[in-house]
Image 1 (cartoon, helix red, strand yellow):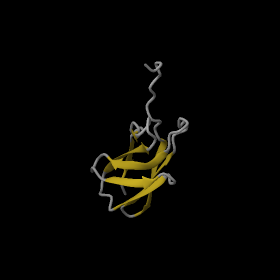
Image 2 (cartoon, rainbow, N blue to C red):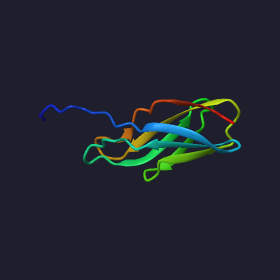
Image 3 (tube, rainbow, N blue to C red):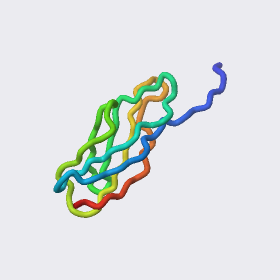
Image 4 (cartoon, rainbow, N blue to C red):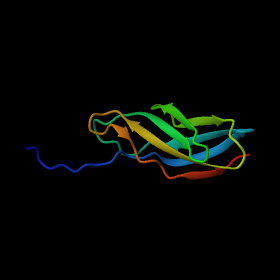
Length: 103
């Protein structure tokens, strides 16, 4: 058999922020996970508005997405990183949720 190895989860994006760019447009930004295991590669991100269910996908080389047509009231955003390596493939745990009031 193989020696025992510790299994680690995929690192999570941090520092989620949101700001208005204009009427009903919100820019959501984040910081890439600080620790990515050797051989693991982030291949994209998924940003969710937990209040409306809307999802925006972003490529690995960005740290922001725009939500247009944001409705009135509060919105809650979370960000997940998509990993593409063999062992670490799949989605990270969602980031901390940011609750943000729409303009």
